[in-house]
Length: 81
Length: 464
Image 1 (cartoon, chains in turn orange, purple):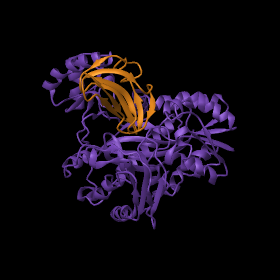
Image 2: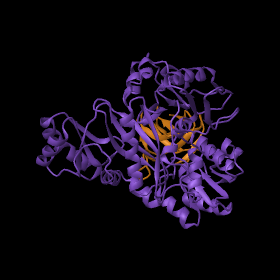
Image 3: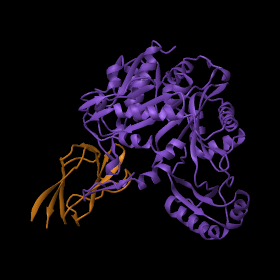
Image 4: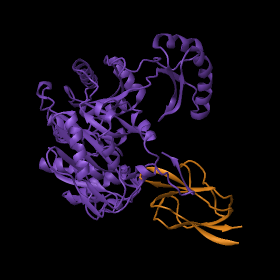
């Protein structure tokens, strides 16, 4: 078991839901596969999916839904199986 | 008279309105988000007032915060620019109810022309051609086939509740229509919860041509047309005034139809009527109206000599139109190139960054509308448009040559932009001939030498 941070690759606004009336992509404590979408980053009116690179458990989100992220900022923690 | 104008927008258009207001002796106050506190528009304004955090929903779209700021700074009028709340009837109404002047049409006109079905109906009433199709939703196959007989094939089957290109199917002939119609209805029901579909003639290759108008509530005038056929993902990239596709009788008929529609609704302020133009038949069809100033307004200003934003402010002050139609004439040709902070080499990936070095082109016929300055760090939260390069010359060919010269002079270091794309476009033989339709640019980009897509495996474009 090891922990890794999932980082924002570029600046923008981070969203944990596909749209305001939809459920969260993933909950804290949820198990995920490699390539699972955990959020969206909006930069200049374009949306990009933020995905996991390995399977494991998302133990924590380190930024709030709909907040500003900087490039390289840790968005969530993944405990890799 | 307007004394203190609150400008509720950002970027180059906020600065554009600041300039017009100051020239008219008005105090220009820019309402800005926390992310835009040091913008050039705020620097050039008489005052700035913060209306909330970076997210547009919490600032530029937050009507309560804007009204509070307007009250705090004693504004007596509000200019919405383009985008954001510029076509929100609720905002126009709220500004008026708060005792201020909204620089634009009445909420009722915004409402009427903002609804596509209502705008289409209004155009028909005013005798303006619309894309031939079913007058309303078709209920069954027999009705659809009857409509198809009069409209002709190919046809678009469009979901009444669809939008933005979703819920559209093409039927090439009656056989296809029999097959596609029930599928389109089922799809519309599952996608939009509404199975109504209507039919429209499918014009495979068309141009986007639009007419600029000004109205004072009784009388309207046109300021000729702009052609905006060079688009990517339905976003305009390059515009010109006039259109190279129109002969004089067609231009006259098109512009007159726009005035007829504007006068039919007692239009007030600056507005633009958008049309599809079918090159093969020479027909034009009204599609929608924008009840605000547009991004590409400067090319009309370059060719007619009329300052559109100044006229908007005059009209909002209660003045009548200052021109008759006969006083509006065209001279020469103007093009506008939208410089976006996007990397054409990486699939137009957004490229916010800090301006390291900036040299604007100058000389005859050049105008720059931009909020960039040396050292400016561009916020990643908004539109990628960072500059508009507007070039005028006596004819189209020399305007394109001059545009190339201007782009050669332009230097911006710090982040990628679409300037290089424009440099290649203005030399393209098809563009030179004016042989464009709204699909031209995307076909042209596909034919360009292979560009390197974003290589990051964890980042995939999800939504355009």
